[in-house]
Length: 387
Image: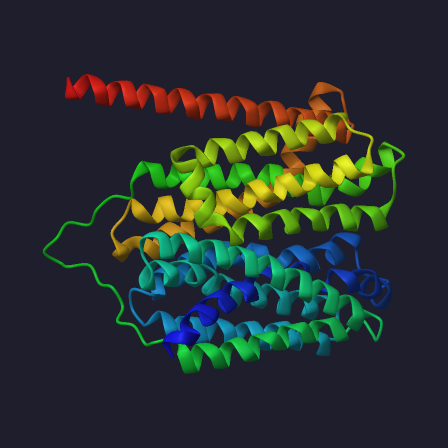
């Protein structure tokens, strides 16, 4: 059972990563099957789960203080499989959307557990290593799922929903190999502690990173068309390179932390800033591929490290609430990415994607300077106190 604990915990995160985009290859077929549906309703099929994921991450946090995490995971995975697979049996767009919303509820219950279970069962270097593996295999699961959904879409618009049957395997693994834990409860004699302000700082950082990272997925096809470099086929390849970069760093995270130490976050942000600047200036496909790989490389470091740092600020009693806050902020960043970046470009009067990428590059450079100044200020303050 101990040998299977690591793959079981990692499999939980693999389930959550394919919540929304797994059936994207069938979106055109779904639109053709429901010709009377508003185009916005069709797009909601992909985004609907995220609207329920955010509140249900906090419900998950509350439930884990009442019942074992293993039970919460099993409930979430049951909802996940029923809603995910069941959507294919609907005959109206409204019922299809209803199942997608319910899927989001299941994902929201499960999502924080992939991180907090690592915090519960591992510490120190092993915890950092597991955070990296968790991120890497989540990306790998996303790739496999998208490929499988693409093949199934050739059969019918209903077939890709069967990818959610993967949840049955994960349900069995959790049932057999995840130990039944005792819910953490607050001692009534101890006053309820406030959430450290830095947790919200890390949550804001997660939102900002996802905001800029998601601009690759939302804008790449248009970026290539505006630059007369390629179309949607090339865009898919370019976007996949972010996943490649993310997997490389996630699998080598502990080694990178040993080398870069306390500067691992500013260096990662700097690399992303350089890569976005490269996208703003480049017309070469190999260079564009390299830049997107570096962007994935950076986020593959940042998200696991932020989780580790945020969890280190609180008592394990509050770990579920911390991850709920950080996870929710990631979805906020994802949702707001096209709205904010398009808004900035529109206000500036430069609607091209290259302008957006140049703004991101400058913003990330400023963020690195602020982080370094903060580190210098804090170091000088500590030195003054010791003196």
